[in-house]
Image (tube, rainbow over all chains, first blue to last red; front, side, top):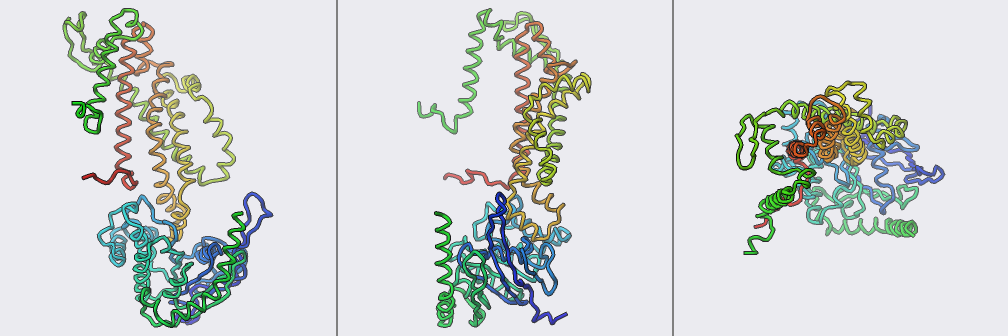
Length: 275
Length: 279
């Protein structure tokens, strides 16, 4: 058993993922090829890349929702079989159950694990308070604003105290102010309970402001990492203020130089696909 | 003056009642002619018929009813039979439809094998099954229940099937990531998601349960409102036929109202338009 502080929380080793068209088996699309990605326990890693490059595919493989065509996934050294039970997943789209109140949504994971209802309710209420929604437990998702729904989703994921948190562009649908507020809250919560975070985004500013490490992916098909940057900005950070830090600007330029060509490539491919 | 009479939100109920009064009045005036009355019935006699069905007190001869109005209160056995058949068929059909819909939606192989049979069973005009059910189950209530169940079942079944197929994949993936087992998925995701579809079908199916029960009675029975209508038709008693129709309509509305109440209570999570209040 390796030392748990330095152990990899999540390892994606030489992952390839090829989708086959359901109607025509000869039509294949390789979303990800030969990608290796390691996230240490307690590390905040962002993955950036052009739209449609297979970032979400990678995340779904790490979550165990999708099986890779080849390669291996290890969770704290153990090969992953089925759903990754040590991970929490925050989705890009609305994932709350519309027929459950905010509190019931946060309680859900605990209920699945057989936590008795009063205890689950108490814990869920605690998490709602931590994301600033103490008063809104009895609201249904449609009665909450977009930002509040994201907070509920965050509480839902954190309530299970996962060792790995996977986030798939969780704030892309929010307006910029709400977004920065949420980013700071996520950072504060993360700083309190250092978890391994794999954060997918297409927003380079967001990636640099939040992470310890930024991985740049190439344009699809056959996405693979083409650059890796350690973000040595001091913590704690405020995502709005850190953007003016000279080191931030420097890193941004460096990473953007790598990313720019891929973004253009990815855009050209989308145009071709649409034509 | 016109401002107050113009149809608006406030006097909607008055307009609705007014329309009913106009229709009844036209009906009454038209039925002054004996030939028309033979086919259309007379509203006052229909009302009298309903009264003697439900009320235990009668009247002597008077201006409206020259022959007097007996208070028989003799419909309850028939109405109870019809309602019992309807409710039984509605319950059994809904539960069966729900169970089969969930099963087939979650078992793609079974659904692929059974697909042509389901299509055939659904396209078949199922009222023709009535004689077979009478043969199998006799003239009692169960042949009517069986007929109504076949009507209710498919409506609920297809809605549940659709409902399960259209569960949001993100919600499903989220529940799986939160650690739901297959059974928990069924209970916390598929079932609630299907209920909204089920409820939209229940309004249709409660009506059809009534249709099945009454048609079943009409085709052969010893009691029930359908039986009363059949008897009245046999003696050209058009007023009683209309009275039967009125009673059935009223009770179908009551059942529909109960379903609506239930829906409102269970579906309070659904966004409804018009939640803002104008000041």
